Length: 386
Image (cartoon, rainbow, N blue to C red; front, side, top):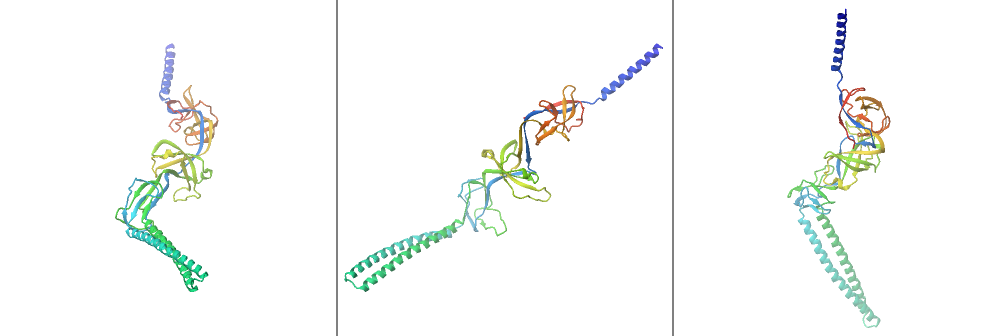
């Protein structure tokens, strides 16, 4: 009888051991998670562009001569830094230069004619005055005095006519110089030559009305740059000129530049297969920030709509749907869901109004398999707040 009881007891113990062993084998393995500490800091509400923006030059000009002709001189090349008024291109203009020289010669000749006519007018005036005085004394005839006065007036008119002729000559010179100037292409501002499409000896023609042609010289002011970016029409009403912004460029990874909204387009763009957007322009706060940057870089902007400082915040990636987070329990190394109340939020941080305290630890890798309420976890890495 005792032997039978011992067998039954051993059987029960064996079953219990087997069950415990199977439970240990089948137990859930801890899930690797990344955690972060609830901290105090600044949280901003921002608006970002819907598509990549573009770095633009404040001033850019595609220049072509106003008249057609053969390129006689092309003193600049792509990449040259030029000053305002510097000659970029010159059309063959020897005929116009000759007209300018002729006009200058005519001015010199007219000045000589003025001198001659006005000297003769002065002599005639003196003679008329002398004969008029003699007439009063009865020493000359009235006819001679009258002829002298008439001759003086005629000479004075010739003097004035010579002066007027000189004015006409100066006007002709101005016309000739204006025609000559049209053969020069000058830089309208200090800048850099971006592209030269003409070649020495080629013929260039002005663009026909309504038919644009490539410019002969493209010049850019790279000292002044801004970002042009599209913002969703829903966000546009909150944006005002002067609002602070952050600028990021693909060419300068992990680097942000301070900016300021300078202009908001007065209309909405409605492009096919795209959301309606409003273009905004953002300046760099520090002019030195855009040194060595190239117009055409892709850029993104964050417009700061509101900002709260010294508030409880968590990484936005840790927030679950329904305003919940996973709290990490150090004691039993498990996680559980907790409701929170949020305030301002952006892609990086979310403000916590209620539900968490500074120093608590939360899970940021919420999309991993096995991250559920009550799961056992193993810390893979602790993120460090910046």
